[in-house]
Amino acid sequence: KKIVAATLSDHPSAIPQFTRSSALDTSINVTILERNIAFVAEVVAQFIYGVQVPNMTVFKGSAAPSGKHISSWVNYLASSSRSTPHIPKDAAMFEAFEQVLQRYTAEVRRDDKPKPVELRTDFRFYTRTAAEMHLHTTKPLMFDLVLLVPI
Picture 1 (cartoon, rainbow, N blue to C red):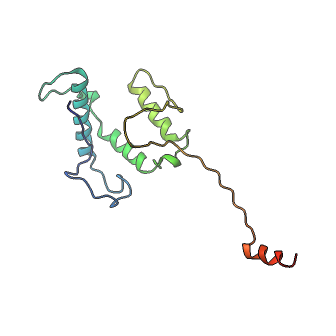
Picture 2: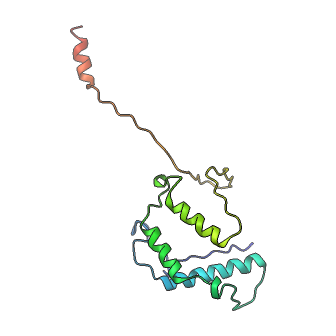
């Protein structure tokens, strides 16, 4: 079975690990990103509808990706935390995603407690974590041992 895969990056080869802390650490060429989003959208549409017509353009005109829209999302995502433990459930980013999806789709429903997906893999996926830490200051062990002798 064929596996369809694509990337929105404009780099011809993979970047070595740990050279950047985020994909948005460097400037992003919005025209290349717009072209790549359009390509991925076309491939997904052709795959879903089972059509294999070369040079067919489904997303054109008002349905085509907008450079201004993409640029505003890049700027917004670059300015907000996207690390899972640091994103609260009521983050403004989720509200923004929900509003955009409601504008372009028929039904949008937020599921804060998704059912676990059973995958046949060796990887474990973790969701948001909350931890509570208690800190107590105590005397060193030697203090207790010194007091034990006279008592």
